Length: 271
Image 1 (cartoon, rainbow, N blue to C red):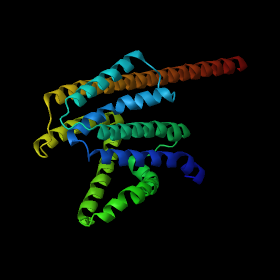
Image 2 (image 1 turned 45 degrees about the vertical axis):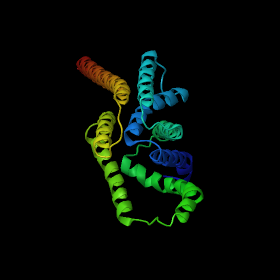
Image 3 (image 1 turned 60 degrees about the vertical axis):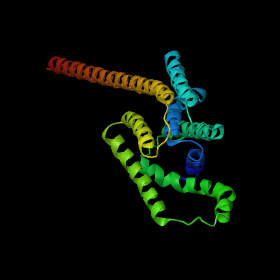
């Protein structure tokens, strides 16, 4: 990858990725694990809205209605949240917005230029850039607090296992997408959110109210329908492509037959 390509394509993606990581991790200080997973259900809404704004997605009334149903479900879950914190919600929504913008920019900056990166290659290019961007707020915002907190000690075991789990996650995503599709990964992500909610309720003892579950259930149905619609559109596109290939092959075969018949008639006339 050339320097110009890296600066124009990877650096903006790395900046958005670092902002998403910083804000989403900061939200855990103010919100429960289960509620953060519910807010993450807004990701398809943000990706679709930003895609429409940047003219990467076509506006469809039924899709927008589905996005509104997801938003209503998350709003209901927020209404029933026992540990609701405005600043924490703003941090998480900002993280969702930056992550959605990053996903759309990947499509605009890389895919449009014919560059396809799997998760491992993406980490190779984006992680150093992301580290630089994260280092800036760490120096000016977090390091002074850590320096004043005498009880803080860097734990290599926690940091090392955390880093290993993050790398293993990206490797698992790469293998999953390679064996199935990106859509399967999104569906698995929804299942992961349910498991995290159940884990936070049973192990961490987070408070999960019935209104939380009703709201997230509605949002979950909206996300499931969105993934189903994308799957059907993908199948229709693949079927159309196969039909076009079959038509092209049939036309090529007919053309070869006509050429062979024409050559046969020429040879007969010459004889």
